[in-house]
Image 1 (cartoon, rainbow, N blue to C red):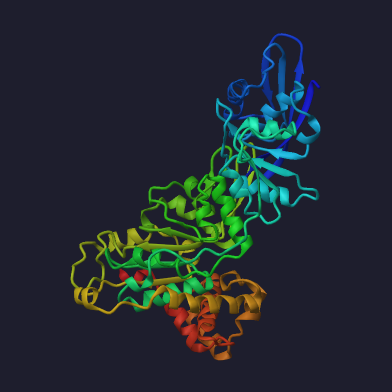
Image 2: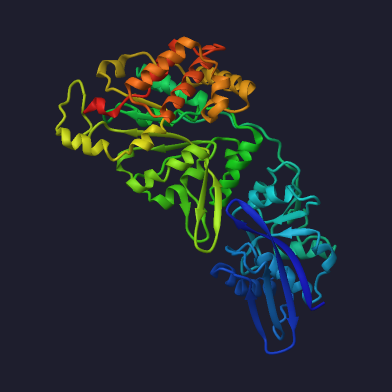
Length: 510
C-alpha cells in the first residue's frame, strides 16, 4: 500500500495527545517531506530514519516521493519520539510490514543511525493517557522508557531494543535476538512505597523549637521558613524533612514520576520517594515555575508531592519569588505562551531558609552585627508581605554554643518522629479526606472543631498582630495539625497559642 497510518503521542504539558503519523509514497522526484507543525528535532528524523532503515537490513524507498504528516496539524510536536512511528509508516507504506498488526499499537522512540531505540521523555504521561482510553492499545517503547510506563497500573507496555525487533514482531517472525530480549512485554509493577531515606534527624542537636516546627510541617504539609545566623543548622533541618513525610499513595507517586519523566529526571530506583528540589538562588522565574517553547515544568512542578527547598531566600530574584504566590495557594501552575498553554501540577511543600540580616549575625549571642537598621530593613524587605503571609510556620533557628554541639546528646531520630507524623496525617485523612494544609472555607470551620476559648484567643492574636484573613486561617490550620499530633479531637487554646508563636515577624530581628 502507498498510504500507512501509525499511532503515537505528543506531549502538551503533562497531557499526551494522540498523534496520527500518516506516510504516503508517490511517484515523482525523490524527496522526503515532513509536515504537521514539527519542531527542529522532529524534522531531523528524516536523516535518522533513512540511516536506521538502511542499516537494519531493510529497504528505504529512495526512488519515491515520501510525505509524512503528523496530525493534528495545529498540535506542536517536539523531540525524537516520532522516529520509530515514521520509520514503521515508511515500511508499511512500501509493503515491507502489514498494516493490521501495526494499528494495534502506539509507538514512540528515538532511532540511532544503526537502528537501536533510545529513551524518550514523558513515557509515564503516555501510559497514563492510554490507560484512560476505552480500548487501550499496546504501548511500544525503548528500554528505559518502557520500565517507566510499566509503573502505571493496567498498562500494556512492550520494550523493544531495535527497529528490526519491532519489524520482526509485526511480520509475525521470531525477534532478532535469541532470548527474546529484543521484544518483551512488561508486567505492571506493584506499587511498593519507597523506604524513607536521607539523613537522620538525630544528627540535629538542640534546636527544640525548630525540630518541633519541622514535625508540624511534615504532619500537616505546611510551608516553613527558618531564620537564623550562618551555621545554625537551617539547611541541615530542611534536608531532613523528606525523611519525616508520610508515604505517597499510588496516584501521588504516579503524578510525581510523570512530571519527572517530562524533564528526563525520573529514576525507577526512586519510585515512590518524595522529590526534594533545591534550586540555586540564581534561578530565574522560568526555572522555578516552568516555561519555554514548548513549555517545560519548573522546579515547583518537579517538587510536586515533595519538598521545594529555597536556601538564602532573599537572594532569589524578586519576580521569581512572587511567581510562587499563586501555586502556593492553588497547587497548579498554568504556563501561557502565544502559541499554546500548558498546565502542570505544583502541590509542593515550601521550606525556605534565610539570615536575619545581610551579614547574618543580627541577634547573635557572641558575634556583633555590622548592619545598620536601614540595611536590615532593606534586606528583609526583599520578601513581600503577600509571600510571607502564605508561609504557615516562621521560626528562629538560633546559634548554639560549642559545648552543646560537641558534647550534647543526639536528638530524637527520624523514625520516631515519622511515626507520629504518619499517625497525625492518617487522622486528618480519615476526618476530612485531605491534609490540613488544604482546608479552606467551610471545610476549615467544620473540621477544625475549635473550642470557644481557642477561637477567642485566635481572634485576639489576629487583631493584635494585624493578621490578614489568610494569615488567621493558616494559623488555625497549623493549630489543627498540632491537635492531631497530640491526638485531640478538638482544637484547644493551647494548640492555637503554639500555632500563633510560629507566625513570627521578621521585624523582631530589626
